[in-house]
Length: 143
Image 1 (cartoon, rainbow, N blue to C red):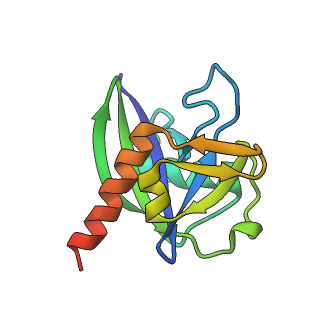
Image 2: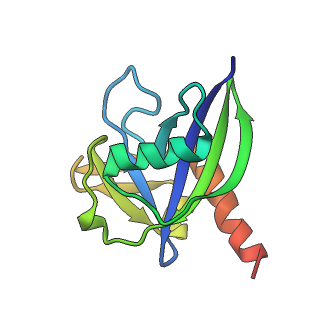
Image 3: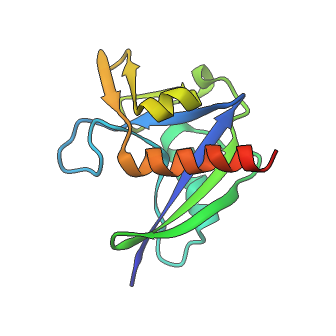
């Protein structure tokens, strides 16, 4: 059975919420900025998984999620959803990771951002940067 993940591009006023992963060497993308999300459990729909993960990781329930793309990546399937972030980031409860912050499109292109909680500049995970740039570019095409 192929492993699936469900991740969320949360957007607010042209900025995108990212999570700074913990500095644990055994996790995927340790110490890097990534999307919120996680594994789709057996028998679980990807839409349900992404909503569950957002609730578990930041105590956020978006009004809806929309599938942006579904892609094979290495040995798993990545379900990428997008949804509006309708609350201030100070109202989110970070339950997993070192930090969270909103990124501008320019910061996404640069590929790194300072984290006050880590006390240093950290890089965005390469696949996350690629997916987020594809999403940002898709917005330009739809105008």
